[in-house]
Each structure stands twice: as C-alpha cells, then as structure tokens.
Image (cartoon, rainbow, N blue to C red; front, side):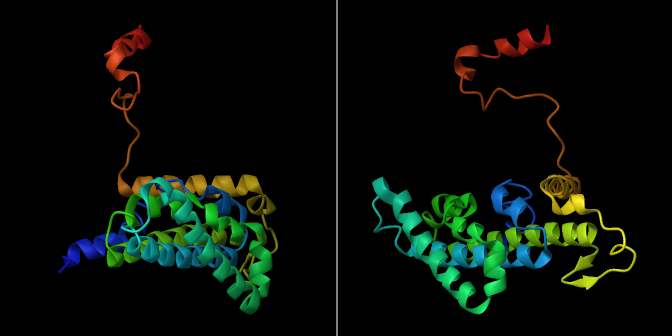
Length: 226
C-alpha cells in the first residue's frame, strides 16, 4: 500500500514546487500564445491535463510492452490519439473555444510537458502514481495559464470573462494582450513564485554541470577571476 504522503506529493508537486510552466519553463509556446483571455487559458490547460492523465495511464500500463528502441515514437502516437479525441470533443461541444485555440490545440501532441512526463515518470512508475503525476502537472499548467490569462485580460481589456471592470474598462493597457505583455506577465509570475519559494540566484557558477569539468579541473574559474 502506498504511503499517503508520497501519494499526496505526486499530486501537489506540479502545482507549485515543480510547476511545469513557472518553475520548469516548459510549454512556453501555448503559454504565451493563447493566454490573452482567461477562458482560453483554462481551455488549453484542461485539454492538456486530459491528454497528460490519459497518456500517462496508457504509457505506464504498457511500459513493459513498448520496446525501448522505439519508445519515443510510441509515446507520441499514444499522445496524438488523445489529442485527436479532445479536438473532436471540443469541436463538437465547444466550437468557440476550439476556434480560439486554433492550431495550438493540435500542437499539444508535441508539448514538451507531456512527452517529458511520459519519459521521466510514466514509463518508470505505476499506473496510479502516473495518473496523479499527470493530474498534478496538468492542473499546475492550467493554473499558470489561468493566472496569465486573467491578468492579461483584466489589464489589457478591462474585463474578466466578459464582465467589464469599472475604471479599467475605460483605460485598458492593450500592450498586455500583445506578445510583449505576455512576456512581462510571465516574468512577473516566475519572479513571484521564486520569491515565495525562497529561491535565490547562485552566487557563483559551479563546474559540476560543465561537460569539460574533468579536463579543465577548475582552471577556467581562476582564469575568469583574473
């Protein structure tokens, strides 16, 4: 029986501490492109969450069957199947949102968050843990897109979910619904997450991650200080 703490951890890690967008800086393309409105952010986030959970479950179930040599193509085929399914559902039941998300809905197939979780987690862990991992990461992605979409919509259009906000609706800052505004809001959210998490930039660059560390033996560090 799995420990309750570990089960909770698999779900909650993707919300803040390992948020794929605000910490991992993954999925930047849809994050910046579709978050001009809060509803677009929620729609893209929930669609990605659906694909994440379903693909993680299937990949975890088939991890002993899929040959290692072709695991990435197999993962992509599985992911693409669920993306096609969510496209059909949204086109049939949410046509306005489907049109708003446009090409980025299809591009969920190559979203590095989904393929990354499939390779790093689902292919190495059990079905239940993989489902929780996908759900947590997906909701973390949805939260990031919702926050970005809300801030950009409120400041950039003076409304939220179509409801006009007094004062702001008379003086909207349209730059926030443009690409530059997306980068600015994303940067501010990342800074806030780092501040609340207590993360600080390193005081010096370490050599442990350098591919030439064994040859150099720290000599370049002395040279750069001269």
